[in-house]
Image (cartoon, rainbow, N blue to C red):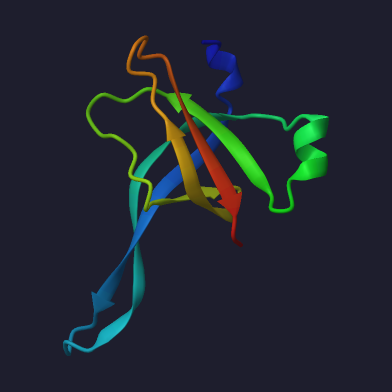
Amino acid sequence: MIISRLNNRITFFSLAPGVNDDGVPIGDIRTDEYSCWAEIAKSTNKEFKEVTKETTDFYIRYRRNKLIDQTWKIDFDGRIYDIVQIEEDFLNHDLTKVKGVLIK
C-alpha cells in the first residue's frame, strides 16, 4: 500500500427515516458513519467505452472495528455514489475496494 495515493477525502453515510418534534415522519435523514482518505482508481479505456453509468473504484485502508455496509452511500467531492460492490482484504488486512455508481 502506498499511503501517498490515499489523497481524497470521502464520507460513508446512511439514510434513515426521521421524525420531527411532533412525531410526524419526515424524509430521510443523513447520518455520517465513517470518513476517511481514499484512492480514486482511474478507469481503463475498455471500462470507459463499455460502462453506461459512471462507476468509480475507491480504495481505503482496511478497518477491523467497523465493516462497510452495502446500504450506505459515499459522498465524494459533492457527488453521491451508491455502493454496488465491496471487496474486503481479510487475508492481508491492507486495502478495501469499494465500487460506487454515481447517482447525483
